[in-house]
Image (cartoon, rainbow, N blue to C red; front, side, top):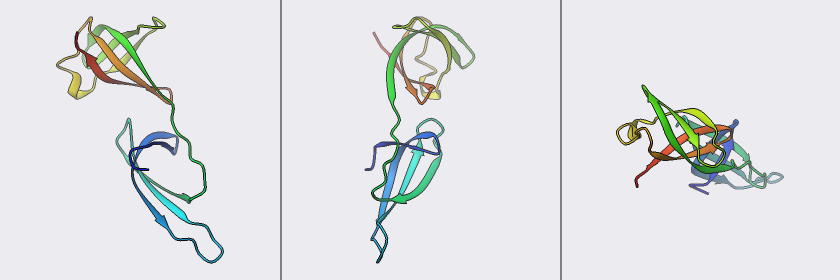
Length: 120
C-alpha cells in the first residue's frame, strides 16, 4: 500500500504508487511498485507477482546528544549505548543543531540518518 516501507534493490524505500494488472489465462496478477528511497530520494520501480512476499526494513528510532560539530558533520553519542559516531547534518536542521542538544536519529538497514532536533 502507498506509504508503507519496503526494500527494493537493497535500499529502504517508501511506496509511492502501486498498479495491479489482471491475471492472464494461465498466469497470476502482477503488481508494479513505485517507491522513493528513504535516504537517497531516488525513484525505483519493481514488477512482481501479486502473491509474492516483499522485504520490509526494520527502522529503529533512537536519541543521542551532539558532542561537537565540524562543518556539516556532527559527532554524536547514543544515550543508551554511549557509542559515539559521526552523522551528516541535513540542510533543514543546520540552524537548530547545536553542541549539547539532543537529537532523534533513525537506524535504517545499518545506515544512520538524523531526523529531528529535540527542543527542551
